[in-house]
Length: 130
Image (cartoon, rainbow, N blue to C red; front, side, top):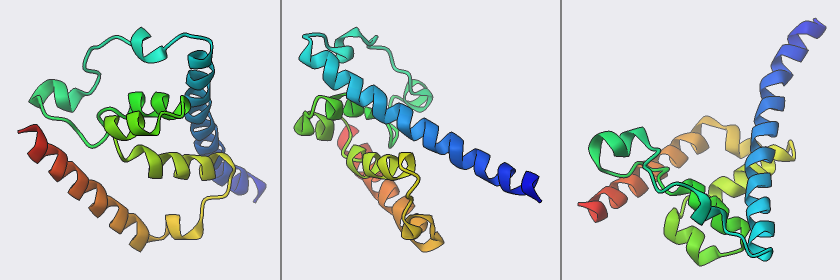
């Protein structure tokens, strides 16, 4: 029985570790910015998104890396400009890293509404790109 509970907690630990890693990189971006170094200029300007490379159109997550790095520098306008979805995602990652995912975030209805919101956002982004 203990092996079942440890198996269930492993994905939770991996999610918490991944969330903490993303937030740590954003925080390091802020510290690097204070030291006069910009991680965004150090990144190659190649398209890492397979969808964008194949279609030339942005996916819902395009710009998220730069958005998180801007968020780490507390450049809220820059983060928004790169990808507005960074704010709800950062909040969700903070909850995940703390091990406190709100019950509403794991309900099917909330997940469906969130996916619908991402699809509407993506549609608007595609219309703007065309």
